[in-house]
Image (cartoon, rainbow, N blue to C red; front, side, top):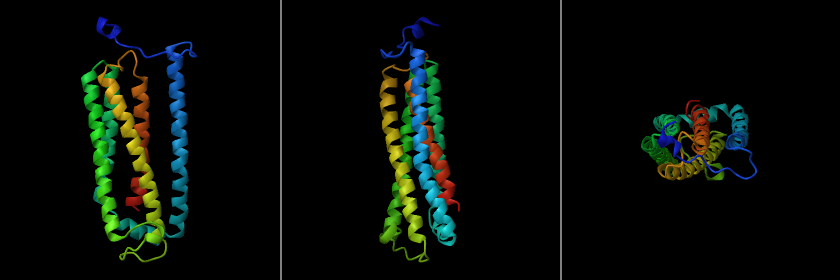
Length: 216
């Protein structure tokens, strides 16, 4: 280990852990358990979607045709790219390239903002067309039974995912600040790694939402 790397911080050991390695293992296990609860949350929505899609196949297919495939595809590319940049930030932190790690985290946050911006444009179009959930549905292009349910699920699933994007951006912003302070390095990068795991989950959920909503 170089003198520069040896001088970098290792992380703070809590009093109830015997070693930093044991603490890091517990942190990783805790994050995986948390991600499991997030998967269960979206699994409930996916189950509801499957039931109503089976009941109203024609309405779901017709409503899907009125979503912007271009916007959905661009957003998919944006999120996949953001997964790449957050993975790069962890790599650069592990190799003591702090400036590159900071740049990659900043790019990830910008990509997340781009994703939300595109969704905002989509939502604006839906409101203008009155393609809204439940009793507020008044979209003239699709008047068959089940159309309102499609948009109800659409707004619930994409809205919940959007909240997770905002939460992920908040975490990444905090990690960006800490990385810029030099808190993550080859000696300690667990916090950054866990933040990256959360962001990968956000991207993974969208990988399922994209075909279910836009490609059916």
